[in-house]
Length: 83
Length: 462
Image (tube, rainbow over all chains, first blue to last red; front, top):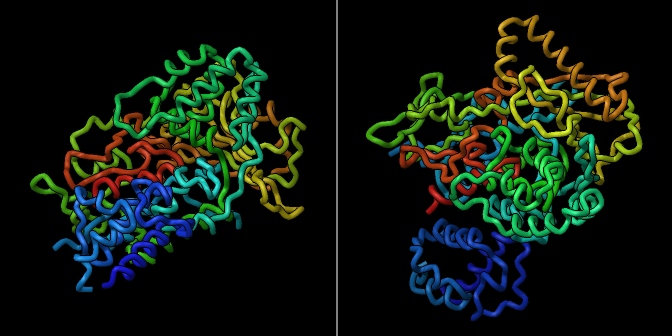
């Protein structure tokens, strides 16, 4: 999976979780949670959705890796490269 | 391998919400419901062609679509339901009526503040400060019980205002008598005063159908007329459930929404069950009136919380009902609800009741019927002091008693708000048996759904 595809998937999952999500001014290197006003339950759902779709186990200590859109793609790229 | 990853006992609001969460993330889930209809404490039934809602006067925790962190909107995201498509009708306005004073309130918290400034000018600043404190309080933190009355006495030092604030908060969610836990108080204060009342578009049946559809979309399974006889356990873990028809279904985990006493009976949990049976139960009368003529000051109200006595007496009455205080609800009085000109008006009155006296009367059909009629008349007589002669020409009247509640919800003692002792963590002696719903501590329609969601999130998804 390319980096662009991974980015699209993350945005799609977020949109799925929050119908009001607005990505117009999204800065890929700033924390997602602050820009999109997501809470911890929403964030957990992103993790759960990734697990459901790609059988990816993401341990709690790795959650900080998912802080920004860029860091998400960096973290997921090796895990999703064969999909 | 077990038949299911999760079995949920009870297809009420907390069970359905828990089911949606579990199924959403691919867990093989089964809800077993003993009755033929879902909804539990907030269900519906048909009588003479009318669909009547049990339990629903109004939903609380109103929040407009944009308030992302409001409980209602978080709940919708958790269930993956569209808040945009969920049409809501806010209340017109409600009132707390005591002999000495009355306070109106609406979904605009400032309105309540104005009313308090008018009737309790010496207390308004303290009230605003207290509300700020409650707004910031985390009611879900697991802390020991704290007296709401002591808190109010300390912050407000105004006994009448204390009682007037407590009447709606207690009658819509307090399982304890006389006092309530500060955490519960904070939950109810937000639900009723900071956020407020609304009706969903349609009836409770439409809301429940929306949940059922979502659950089915996520491939959740559901069985009606499947009452559970026992929660099977072995070697310190639960294995699943045995239905009353003898069928055994295994699961990795079980979530029970039937309450602590019911769960204890099903599992053999060594509890002193009496401590967990609530003493607060109610009788409710529903009237359909062709035309409702109200005194001007009572018109256009959604819910009236009344007390004919000077002090709030929130406890089990010594008589079958205590008509001296209660709730009067006009289910049609919500913004934007169009009613045809000749459609009848619905009025619902709720009064505290004594379960034991009703249970005794129920041993004999005639006696029970007489008691229903006598208490119905008592209630009408009391409420007529507030509404005038309102039942004239009633085309339909029905009532349900603590016995009705117990029969249809299996809540021991007809205790609609469940056990006075809650288990906030939802944990039981078994590591894979959990409770959700009223006895986990979140009350109301929104609250009980959040309970189901939270327990699944905390214990069954990670």
